[in-house]
Image 1 (cartoon, one colour):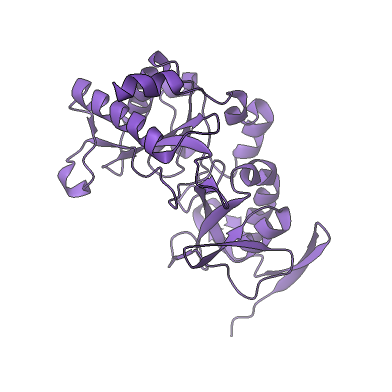
Image 2 (spheres, one colour; image 1 turned 120 degrees about the horizontal axis):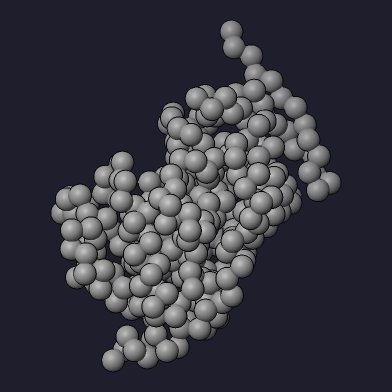
Length: 295
């Protein structure tokens, strides 16, 4: 008969029980649950920055990344005293605002963290993202696509940061000044998407239905909306190589870096070298762009 093991850790003054610490969550990478929790501790200062005070959805994989999974929107029960929650649309979401909450979720095999685009109790977006989503599982043109959209934004005087989704896509992240609406940002996204489709018809599409995209790369400006989510910067992903959603430098994109190179095993050294690239770009003023798009 199989036996389960448990241990306890003290995080921020809270005692947490860790179940099955030796269970392999990424067998190919030999990453056990306790290793995963250690990596979450290292990622916490970065990951929490983009998850705290937001409505959090996690994806749980009790038996590892390649086994059965489920989305968790409602906060798991029983709820520890240190875990904060927030209600939206009848759902009681976790507010991932502490290291203790992060480790509690990690022990529940929450391998992915997907926060809302807006803060708790707020209607305005906290940032702006365009999701570049390949139709093909293996898409060697994805960094080329990201570079093109980055250049279009640059010509519009919008500074941005590319980040791997941790899966197959790339997202273009734009810090913004507070005050813009989701509708305004969607109008810019549609403008950018329509422009690159017109200029590169053999590369891009804004067709919503995957079955109609052929091999084209989808410029998804619609996902960025109130109540929706996307993979957080620095979230691990349930993929074979334990990849992490990682902000990139534009020169790395130009060199066609491989998203599979950014993993739980390498992200610590990278953060020591380059820090949080998103924090190095100031909030962008989009007033001039909005005025042009309206015309």
